Image (cartoon, rainbow, N blue to C red; front, side, top):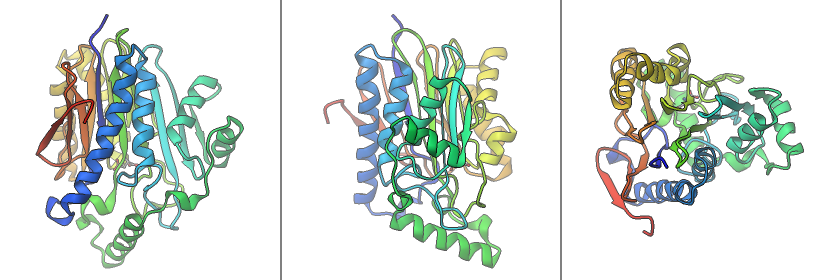
Length: 318
Ligand code: ASP
């Protein structure tokens, strides 16, 4: 029996610490903790990494604190176009949806796409329809909208008009949620879900639904879920790149993940982060922004959640 491991992120687009009340940070941490509990309960009971990452991501999609599902970013037309993917490290099967507007939990639709096996990536109205036929929860687009995202869209439009978009804060720009896990049978899985970035062009597709970019899992190597400016994650094939460095250069998961975020991506002056778990259960969570919503569970069942540098230790029962 292999050791089990779980790590999650709620995006590297967090506010500078002084801009949000302690109560709001605490509320985000509660949902990170709930996400860990959902995934860990499955792994602890001998369930699969695939089920664990899906369950962990669903909790964050349902939370208003993260840019995925309820609370997702708005595009330039004030619409939500959601992306999600899931990947099974055991078989390298993957499923993804992009530009969906009505699926309450896009990660569940990604899983169904993978299981159907006809396509890896389904997009737009056809993906919404697929989810409906599959019996998943369908919601009105307004379900995804929160006050904070409306404000972020207005702020990004103002930046765009003033030519200062590059100076916008990371939280005004983007966010994503994701999970990676290793199960007791030694299998790895990853899942990621996002609203993309605020004020993104209509029809823009990021890295999140692209296996090998925002999401990647391969047994014996590692599982990766990314957050940050998706165009760079696609161009650098970040998920696959982290796995390749582990596989061919024999780097540790932490060395590999840290080099990709801090050396390859940082010079582009874009926010970027990821969580990764190795075949040995080691966890890495590098980011180059002020903070990254994140959490992980250690062997002894201790839960760790963090937004900025401070890390909070909890237990399964807190
Ligand atoms: N990676 C996401 C995207 O580009 C956004 C983010 O993680 O901040 O769609």
